[in-house]
Image 1 (tube, rainbow, N blue to C red):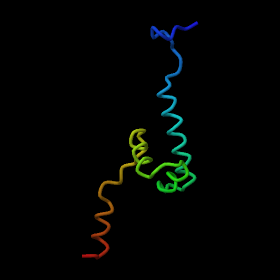
Image 2: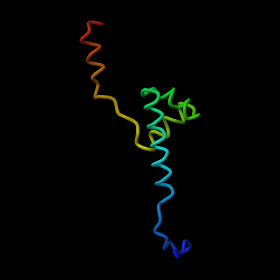
Image 3: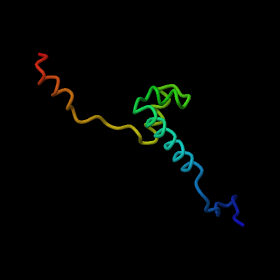
Image 4: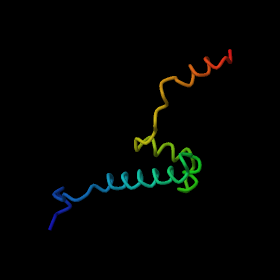
Length: 79
């Protein structure tokens, strides 16, 4: 039998398991909401800001492409 008190227990790490489960739930909600974070937050019963913070903590935030939208706006003749 493993002794939990002296750190000898080599079972699953609860924090890592909870983060993996939370990541899976968020990804499933985003899929169901076709990527819309506000709808995904509603599906999960969270505020959009809370979902965004969880996504940042779990490494689920995608960085936008490097300034491609700015150059497209200039090329469209808006200036």
